Amino acid sequence: MEKSIPVLRTLLSAPGNQQRKLEKAVLAGPDALILDLGDSVPPSEKGTARG
Image 1: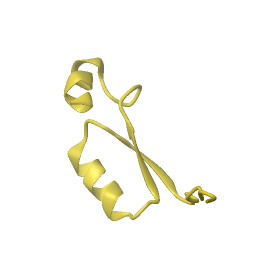
Image 2 (image 1 turned 30 degrees about the vertical axis):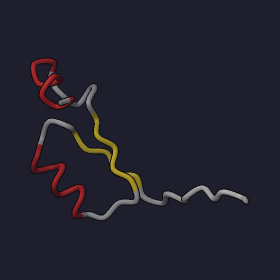
Image 3 (image 1 turned 90 degrees about the vertical axis):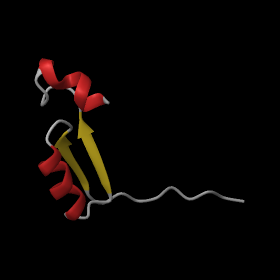
């Protein structure tokens, strides 16, 4: 049996510490949502964003 790999046409990245932006990103309907937990999140908020 051959397995198929899903085609992702739309990738959207959003900062993982901003709830409002995450909600809007989900509503935009991307094929995949990438939560940025690195450079877009201030050091003081990284723990909360990663939780």
